[in-house]
Image (tube, rainbow, N blue to C red; front, side, top):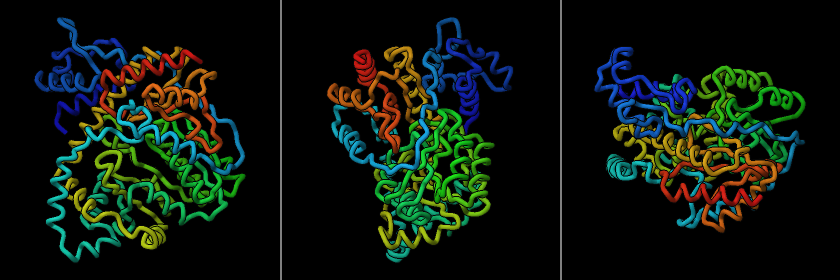
Length: 469
């Protein structure tokens, strides 16, 4: 990272932490240059970058100021989960009705589960596909089907190492996206009827997996900033025969919450104490605003209890469907189960991503993607301030591309979903994120697409519909 990019990230962190508030003047170019020992041109480059990211704005003859969109007019959502008994999961029909609403290109995609394809280096990936295929020997096409493309495994292991995790390559299993990794892992550690601790609200696909495998959900509430409630988790682990946990420790979907390092360590100690395996769904880590993502719970794993799952679908190549699992003590069982089901992801897709990681400038792409998402988040927050009821509460995650919105209690998000769909706007209603279909006055909104006048009109439409409740 160049010095101006480092300095821009330092200023961005101060803005996110509230040290530099909305409307506040940031240090002048001369002050910043003198204080930080960098040239005026470096400061100018940093400030231009922050302008492009939508964090600051220049005022004629006055300097640079923090954009107003950072204003915290709308409060933070509350932990509103009601205590529940272990539950059978039946959400698929509701989820499919939501997903069907995203098929129309004319719909404003606030309900989308993926960022816009415009944010990904598709042309450069095509070049990597060609290069990767040329480098493949006929023997590799067959040999790599069971173990995964060896160069891809090396690149993934290298990224673990750069993040402070020494991961043996034999622990890696390449999968058809993170969902296959999570499915395989869950099947290896549970039987039908078992109890699985999940977050609430939780990513709806995890609920669908539990439903398909006939597993029962134990819902653990999640704080919108601090992550899963460890006290309630400890109580449930003590009182119930929980066989596995499925958690997102960083940029949790749908809340965007992240556990601190200390809370991740405490979570691991709970798992170790009760000898309960954890599926760590970590697909959003690379979308952390600013610098590199923090270490996952896997970094503290001493006994192979944490099954770390991720993919390139949310940060690089959605359609390639290449993910992986670092299976810990369960790696061999996961690998064997995979051979009994899908055998292998596409070898050409693996070769393309391996080449891109090695030659394509992956970290440069990630910086650009994070900056775009941060600017788009600011635009959606500002629009929510303008159009939503004043009692609305909304998250401000430090990465990813989702906002969790808590409306006044009289709002029925399922009814709002149907009304919005009729007006050409999609959203994800709160009940699809709960095994017991709670959160009826909440929605998840995606800012994963470039912000346009159409996006602004979509938010205005939602605001008008909310006035009908």
